[in-house]
Each structure stands twice: as C-alpha cells, then as structure tokens.
Length: 293
Image (cartoon, rainbow, N blue to C red; front, side, top):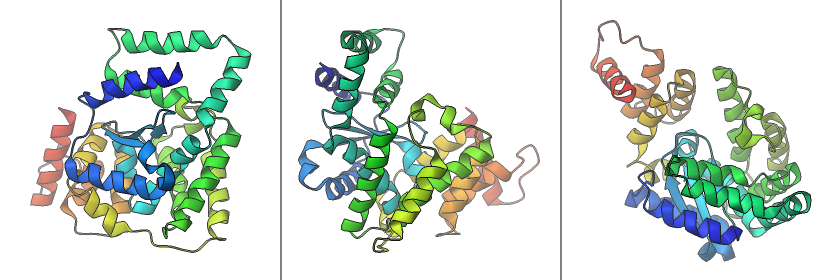
C-alpha cells in the first residue's frame, strides 16, 4: 500500500510545475546518484524539486526528491553526495519499511494510508503540499539517522570524495539557523533527527579516520551552472537575508568574482532605498526587486 501511494505521488511529481527540468543539471545529479548508489543505481530515480529549503528524501519505491534549497547550500560535490548517500542508505537498509512496521504495531496502519491518499486527493492541497508530505512521512528513528550518516560518509570515502564535507553540511546548517534565530530541532521535518551539532561532531570524528578525498568543487559548480541564478533568486525570495549572505559568502570563498554570488551576497547587505553607486549594486537591487515580486 505504501509503495502504491508513492508510485501515485511520483506520477504527480513528473508533471508538476515544481519539477526542475534543466537537462544539464539533471544529468549531473543523476550521475552523482549513480556513483553513490552503486549496485542500487538502477533502482533510484532522482528528481530536482524547486523548493528553497534544505532537504532531500528517498521513498521506498525508488523516488528521490532533491530540493533546490539543498543544492544552493552545498558548495561542492562531496557535500551534495553526503546527503544523497544518507538518503540512499535509508533505501538500501529498508528504513522506511522498518519504521512503518513499528508504527503499524502502535496504531492502525490503514489510517496512515488513508491520510496519505486523502491528502493527495484533497483539492485544497497543491502538489507542493504533497511533496512536503512525502518528505516528512518517513519519521526515521535517531538510530536510523545515525546509521544512514555512517553509511553515507563511508560511501564518500569509497568514491574518492571528501568525508569531512559531510560534517561541514551540518556545521553550515547550525550556523544558518543561529543567524536566523530558528531552533531547527523544533521543526517537524527534523524532529526525529539527532541534533545538528551532534551529527557534525560524530561525522567530523569519523572523517578523521578515513582518506581525505577530493571535494570536487569545480565539478559541482559546472554541473549546476545553468541553475545558479535561479537557485540564488529563490533563496533571496525567502526573505531570509542573513541566510542568503552566509550561503553566498561560502560560495564566494572559491570564486570571489562570480557576479551571481556577489549580487546575492549584496542583497542581504545592501539598502536599496538609497541610490546604487555601481552596476553591481544596481544588479543586486534588481534581483532583490524581482524576488519581492
């Protein structure tokens, strides 16, 4: 029943206005997923979904959602692959089935499926609500999350990527939430996850025991180059300017002259009520204006 529900949702996703259809970016992401998934590569179907929040999810039927908010927050292939490897681990270890069996022992499982089907068919819910429902329905236990982290960081090392970047993901998330004043562990999407600082500490320790590997920052930037302006415009549109500055400045560490990044960083720092004094400031205010619309 759960697989049938996910199959139905995947069909909706394929025709959704939130689906990113950029050929270059999709080819790049599919290649990263194939590298990380190994023998399971043919089972997993990744979809880029235009939602400016940090998240990816893996359904038990093979459907993988990768939200654009995750893509803009990762600045190299190792960081992205760490999250994808974590989700692939949930799939290969059948965590969703195990979790549903646990739920089934505690409540009427048919009620859960009825809720999913009702949510997918309710006219007042749009497809974005459905994607969020899918991403949050698998409330893995903390043990599952820790196991998936361990498998994901080992997959990075096995593929010649940089395990330390898995820890940096969570350090960056912690910094962003602090800047925004948001207690992330109160968010329902992450309620069952270990605390970000705990994950970062454990992953950093584990990375010290593994080969250093290559972050592959250049490959990541090139693979997503056709989406970069859209990613940052969507981030600006969230109105979380402190987060936008942190994200853009991290990317600028590797390319201080990238115009998209300098504009995005400038939006968070620039007062557009005064007259811009340069073309860069003009462009930043243009992006800010478009995002507000």
